Image: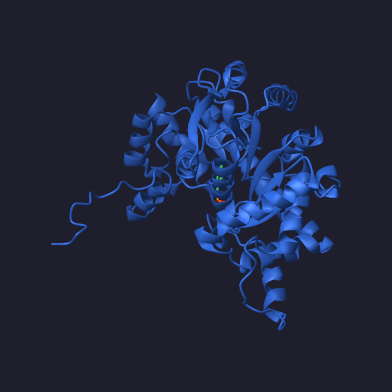
Amino acid sequence: GSVFAHLVQAPEDPILGVTVAYNKDPSPIKLNLGVGAYRTEEGKPLVLNVVRKAEQQLVNDRSRIKEYLPIVGLGEFNKLSAKLILGADSPAIRENRVTTVECLSGTGSLRVGGEFLARHYHQKTIYIPQPTWGNHPKIFTLAGLSVKTYRYYDPSTRGLNFQGLLEDLGAAPQGSIVLLHACAHNPTGVDPTLEQWEQIRKLMRSKGLMPFFDSAYQGFASGSLDTDAKPIRMFVADGGELLVAQSYAKNMGLYGERVGALSIVCKAADVAGRVESQLKLVIRPMYSNPPIHGASIVAVILRDRNLFNEWTLELKAMADRIISMRKQLFEALRSRGTPGDWTHIIKQIGMFTFTGLNPAQVAFMTKEYHIYMTSDGRISMAGLSSKTVPHLADAIHAVVT
Ligand code: PMP
């Protein structure tokens, strides 16, 4: 018999498993709102025009080679990524206090940052919001950190539990790490206001709590790259230290290229240099060095003023379509007279709406309407179109009446 015969079948990933189930459904009306990937009005995946142009440039450049990148990845990509998230005029960049390493998208950046902290930071506990992206607790546990939660979402208002958040961070041991979604909180679509961010910042700095920002949706929340980066820049402006994990999966549509960056903002340039040397020791035995293609695409776009501007327009168009889907779904429920307050659909921000539907209601909608979503009632607005809104509204109406 096999030495692996004792293995039990592992469950599907709770998020990616939704697509597995969707793919098995032969119904022509089926609708996948489970996965956070952008779709066009026609329901098709989108490759941005600037990405096509950048790839063409790369193909035409005969001087390009396929040697290994350094352990920290593509240098130009790293510099441009830091500027994109921290701002071109960031004092931390000017003072050489930032180290940035290319990692395997947002997930890889979180994992490398987590392992670095587990090895070198004096506190091993990371507080993550309740709820949060389902991969967070697993990433940080396997990185060697101990994971605790802070209150974030209030089901009764379908908004932020700001009081609970302040109480929980206020009670966290001095120096604890705190994971913050930079914008477009997943799965709730609920973000603090800038005034609330300022209070969070003050509280965290007063207790020496270490901010670890997860920036998976820069530009997707408001349509503006700078607006969505504001909370991070507030924390950088006070001169304190922080980590930020960036992903280009959503905002450049580079999902499968696995391109992202981890930046660590330090108080002094010499510290940043030593931090980078230690990051290399985390990365080398993990995957040696990151892939070259996706980072090259990003570098081509970020370095060229015209391509950059074109990207911001394409990004804004994606964000606007998502916002328009919110309005259409809200209106569709209103016109059906669906019981309940659905204003959270238009108030929430980013790719997802946290509908408030419970697991039994979700199961009903999947069985009777072939609509797929995670069991917590999260739907991807990016997977909706004008054509599919009525079907979703019919299903929600049926399940709550
Ligand atoms: N953080 C959050 C909050 C996310 O929603 C995601 C993607 N679903 C990620 C990180 C990481 O995604 P990726 O590794 O594809 O960049």
